[in-house]
Image (cartoon, rainbow, N blue to C red; front, side, top):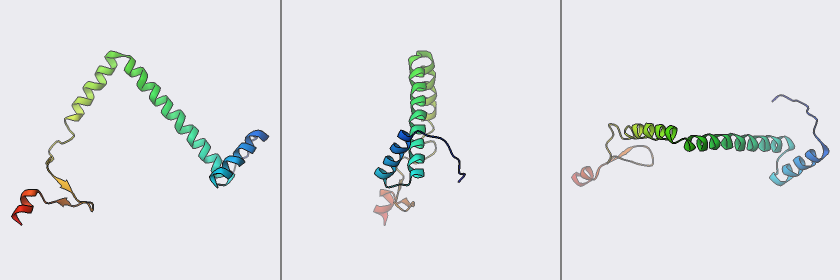
Length: 101
């Protein structure tokens, strides 16, 4: 991890130390966590704003919905809809196979 010094205010440092104490982390871990949370929040805010703008345009939203319908057709493409899987990843026997055993 690269060490870099950045100047921060006393108030920010005090808050960062308090965050670290609340989370039982080091100050560095608390800073990483705070920056990652803020980044994620901004990312999802931008993604949600993009979808809101898309939904506000009826023609563009109709194109998105039409494309989704095309992809929906591929969800079970070639798969047996009655096929079941066990927790360990094996194909579970069908009810017909169970009756024959």
